Length: 140
Image 1 (cartoon, rainbow, N blue to C red):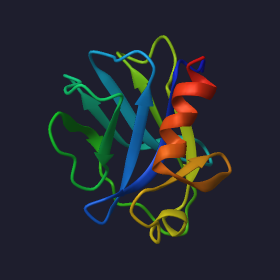
Image 2 (image 1 turned 135 degrees about the vertical axis):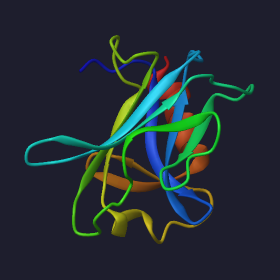
Image 3 (image 1 turned 60 degrees about the horizontal axis):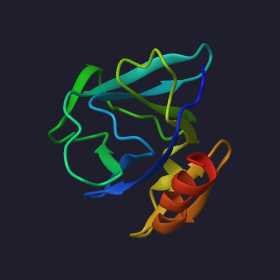
């Protein structure tokens, strides 16, 4: 799938794993999902029917999604022994994704405030680095 201008990472929100999505051009709607391997299969999918606010990012608490995010299919009962892939996309996803991140729950459960798990394979970066990565490295 083609990548569009943005970045996806995993952080913590309200003590839960959360997908962090940053973009260059704000979408009007977007979606996200978490997949597990062998074979790749969607575990849980979310829709955001109205990207609100003036920021260039959003956080999706995968356990307790809050408006404007909605659970559209599946359940976020993630297995601590499984490596997952999270992706997010603008609109209906037909024009590509903002990015993807590989993670296991053990990778993100001890993140500190202001930290993001980024990449595949992933590594810990600061929130500022994550946003700068989206703005400079991906959006330019």
